[in-house]
Image (cartoon, rainbow, N blue to C red; front, side):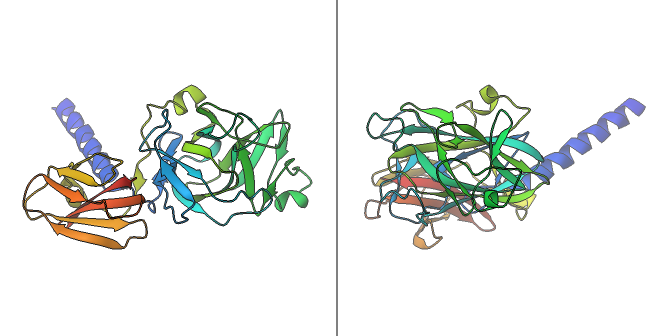
Length: 319
């Protein structure tokens, strides 16, 4: 009898934990924070809210993960910020020091020293480059900190120049010209933080970025089979999450016509742009339907399903 009670208590505990987890996850919309789990955070670069027209989302170069990659095709800005920010909100559950790297490649010319970088800032307790005990931190903090040097090359307003001298896709993120330092970040407490990307070089393809705890190997964290991290929301209820339908939406990316499957009759299908503005609303009368996006400009949109109190959102790339 005692064993039965013990098993029952364990099952109840597992159920409660599962309900709590469900209540905290939500479809990613570019604004909700991506949640670190077990010391790894993986974000597809195209998942951010992209406002500047010179940031492009593409998938013509093979070897990427997710829906594609991003690159800058505007003027290069080597000494100052471009102010074409893409912000990624993140939720850190496990305090500690993480290595940062992104999956990238040079996509113009054959020089490994050009078209190979971007500006990056991570709001945290410590953000630095490190090589064999030598630390660098971005300007202006490095100019008044006797314990840390300024990186050789460019840095400004808390942003590192992050570069990777690779013509092929690989995980890399260095700072400090001429003597590459890997990039690390320390979070002293769990919480919501922010990663900010800005344009520096053109035609540097950025596919996904990863933060991994020092205790986790690169081979584990940088495995391209790893899924993108889920997004965190503290407002979803368990009942609402149970009603979310597994929409099938294809092709994605698309040049125009998109098929949406697994609908319920009388579902409302809503298309919004990256600013949250509703482009169109469609009342579904069939379980499978097509929507025409051919008149929309190239970019990222969200197709949402509203069914009373439940909702579903899927990102789609219009080529």
